Length: 398
Image (cartoon, rainbow, N blue to C red; front, side, top):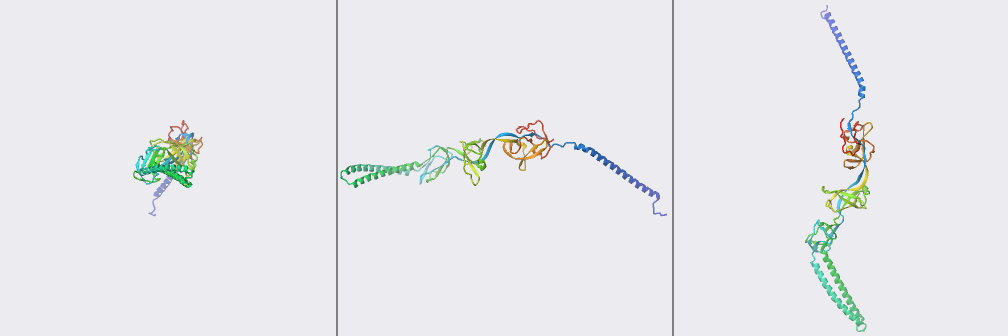
């Protein structure tokens, strides 16, 4: 008998435990199998129920339709305020000093009003000399006339020669010419004397002054600038294409830089016949009324009124700006929205003109920033479908 082998009862006990463990594993596997099959059956049964449920709407929205309106069409432009006519007033004398200046920039003047005076002492002296020369020439002429008449009476008697008679006639003509020269000298000095008084050529307002007391006047030197008749004009710069939309007599409104002033209404007087080859802009001259709202030299903005024109409009809230483009959301029959790119035109208050959209489409009125193309929406009931509604129902999350 080998003492190293275990007893027989120990060998039977080990086999028993191995069989028991195997049975337990089999039972556990069967339990897991039946549980998995039951879950799969439940999932299969519940699947039709999930498929029958409707998808959830993204938003509750208000539906509107574009509305056609007659809008006043306007053309915006910029330009300078300038004088209708700016008169340059200068000196007609040379070598004389300015003695008095009566006006300054901004003063209103009338035609013929004295603006400045130039020294006239030397001119007055020359005028007095010319008048004395005139009297002397007149006396010489009178004497020559008398002598010529006496000689002409003796000419037919043969007491004097024809040559002597001709000399007396020449003396009379020479004296007459000297008298006329003296008269011309008087008129010339009187004109120079009048030119020592610088006067306004027309009614207006002084826009510039360079005359200074004590300065030496020169011929053609600018002393003053005058805005004739106080009239200003707006010289609007308009593109070549827009230039053909304007006509003489149209109304323009110029916006004053002063917020306390109302817009100035002017009238188109003339459209420039040429286009600047550098800027490709043409000038439109607009007459302005007397006003303090704008001043000469200002660069201001204005609008030309082109008359009424039909416009298809939607509220600003229905427009979505994304990536530099404008979009609207069209509500389709299945309550899904379609994102569509649109082109916009004029704006008025909270309305926007749409240039490429049909009139009979239904659009989301607001909340477009929360939507994407193809989203399902719920349409709110009893909402007037008009873009002019004062109160639009706010969007709500469902």
